[in-house]
Amino acid sequence: MENQLDSLNRIQKVDAPTFLYTRILSRIQNKVKETVPVKWAVAAAACLTLLIIINLTVIQADKDNNKTDLTEVFSLKTNNSLYNE
Image (cartoon, rainbow, N blue to C red; front, side):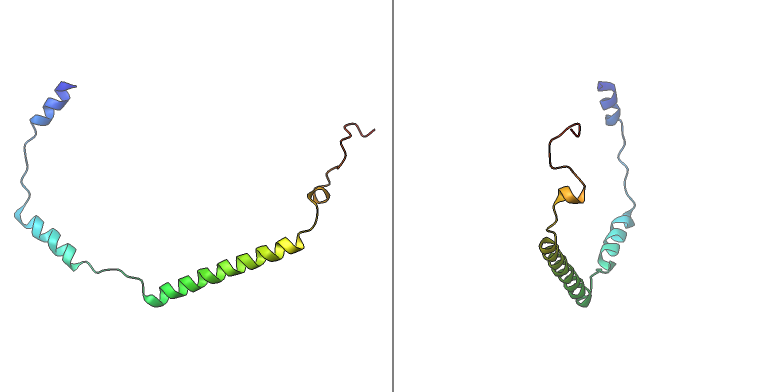
């Protein structure tokens, strides 16, 4: 393990080109901010709100209409007879 760590001591420092820092800074400054238009954000919020309202309405309507017993739906027996005696 020490041999591997000693090999790191032999690494020579490399100097970056002089123009590299200025090139990076110019790219950062020239970067155009990508923003979503307000109209699109409002439209997305309205669609999500409408979708949630529709889902809640359907769930409430389904609770009122779902009065069937699961034993009838799946044809399950309500008695405990094992061998149909």
